[in-house]
Length: 581
Image 1 (tube, rainbow, N blue to C red):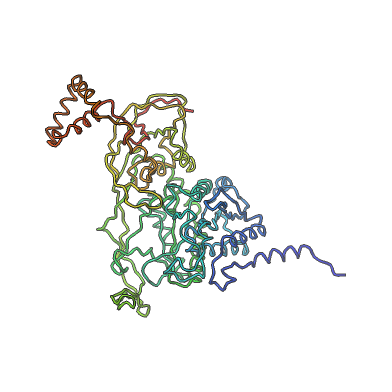
Image 2 (cartoon, rainbow, N blue to C red):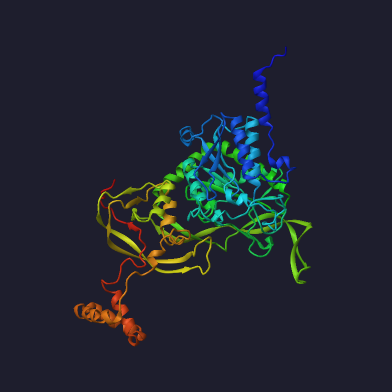
């Protein structure tokens, strides 16, 4: 009678899980995993390694499915507080925000498996992986929506089920995907964040290019570590692994030969959003024309390199982020907008292909092509220095009327600490009036964006009510707070149309009735009469319009509504005792 060794059967079963191939590998490296395949793979992986891996689910998405998060930790710490208490770094990888750019989906699956299979989970790092962020778009599969891309066979679509580009949604939060991502991000508070992508644009020799958080907008302590330690390590290690890196190729002209510029990612983008929270972010962009298997391999090697680096530098990363949070809490002035310094540039080595022109077979006119038979290595210019274009001094606190619920909910979601007034009170607040702005003529991501906002501040006594929110600007989340609440910031809540109701006047007058009222106002108020005469002297056309004169009197009287064009969030700029709960 044959005896069966149960322990050996168990080991054999685990070993089978060790060797589980991804759909990418099974296809001969021509196909990318579907959402269902990715979740099934991670579910199996977590069951096979219950002490080092756990698949969590959070919130929901516009598609009705939750966002999943695979957590890998050598000590079995699957709660964020455990990593914090044990001073471990959190490294977050986001995949499939654009499902037609799927290399990270497949590379992350293989990386997680191999780290577990080989017993190589890092000592100092908790690795968090979002398998597929744009679940909606991943279901909308074709092989044609990325017309310039070399594989895979089929892939998902850039827009989600509401046709939002989710990499423009990190401030406005129109999608449930974004709200759930912010829940994950602010629960785990990663120090390092990577959002995997595929590029469009010029042809060149590199398989992988890299967009780091823009150094000038990043906190200075983090920027120093990024530029002096992280980037040199990444570039050196990837060169050794056979996938030499280049900066993202953002050409100033049609080809890279004339130079490239850095990318200033606003907080609408994932890495720009991460920077608001003192997280160093990266957007790796594999090159669309390289074979899909090479793009996945380059992404795998880059993610593996991040794990090695974050583990190696865990202590300095932790200290740098803690220092940055303390500095941001105490920081008094904040840059709201940036401009590229066109006079300063670096010279970098670039490996490209010779750009040429030939007659188009379609139009007969000259068309651009890159001759891969003529590769080159040359020095090109890189403009990557940005300067402040607009700066604001922070207030002591912002006072937010309780009616603006979406604003309040997003602030809470982003770990902004708030208190509420216990009772009705009058406060002296600095209020902004919107003096000028531009509004887009066509919608962008579901919004008619405002820009070039100019404000006129006025000190006013404002009726505030029990339950209104007071938000002190002395927090690590100051940058999120200020770049969303200051109307002039490019990605402010105001510019994303959260407050458009203040731009419409609610009351007015009928001329034949207001004529008598206006006459009485001029009789009882000599200074108003003098103001009208002065304006008529400056503007002769005013003398020709009875209505315009009535309008002037109306706007300079108590009848004119003070809330028209007044931004509803007040700035507390002097110390005052508040009764808060």
